[in-house]
Length: 247
Image (cartoon, rainbow, N blue to C red; front, side, top):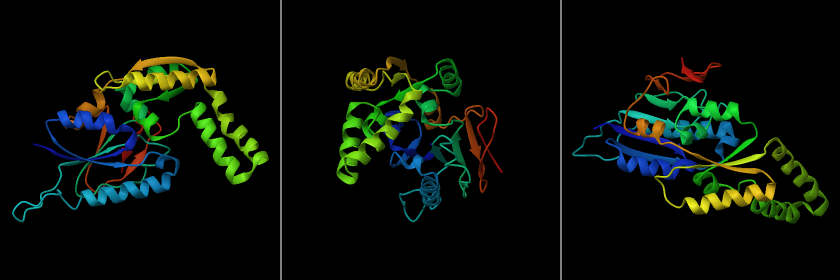
């Protein structure tokens, strides 16, 4: 049985927990908080620490033995180059060829490319994103304005909110990615619909796929979908459809 150390973002907790429970491998998961991708240097540092810890060995010592993991799965997209420069240790790294977690939720890079290039103005919603952060909508507006008002006063709060809302103008569609194998879709669907109505965006739903994550968590590494980084090699960004490589 392969022993996999998984390092992932909290927004994928439900999906990875579900698939991990069905895996034919031993799956040991560490989640990092959502939002670190907004601070690439901090995320890179935290990931490097997790990789280093994984290289210390399997967490359970049986009669003095501390065997190693077979692979460390770094389940992150390139995420503004946050994973660029990360180095494997004595254990190979396995990393999805993805720009961000939406590829993982949709199930493949091909599906992501089809939707991304075919439909401009999409803002993605998922169970994890809704649970871990305030998504664009009335709740986010109300709470953000309240925080600005208390900290900066009314005039500054109005100005900051204009800036806060300004980047929303490039979007016109709220798309909820549903995995039917997970429960509770009605709540997340309703939440996304309310956000869309408040922002005057169109609402759309896409059925996601566990395809890519399921294969990774079962130790199946398709070269077209994932990068296997050999021992003591460094992840580098590629400006091709492969997205990442190593040196």
